[in-house]
Length: 140
Image (cartoon, rainbow, N blue to C red):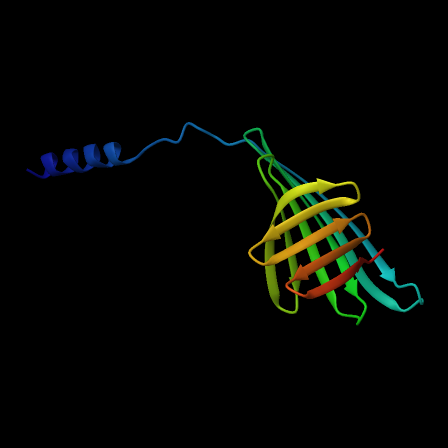
């Protein structure tokens, strides 16, 4: 009787165990650029970061830049492209906004979601919500 219980237990264990024969190939590339002083020579910490992921041949890339408003407040914008869609994630004042790519323009790109839009160019980001417009300059 004990032998039958042990054999049944082993058989159940073998049936319930699955061997995962698929392995995912993953490759990541990181890059950062850090500046320690601002235009006045004051110590300032700014970092631009880029990340590229490739999982089973599907590539996703993102790059983050620091921005500064005229009033001195700061924001970070992360541009993400997974090959199918592009988004921008804007983080400022403990808030996070994700906007979808809408179209390219001669000076940059337009992103929108709900009532918020952002126009990105090489060195600035113009965010609009209703009648309010916020101009952010890229920190270099």
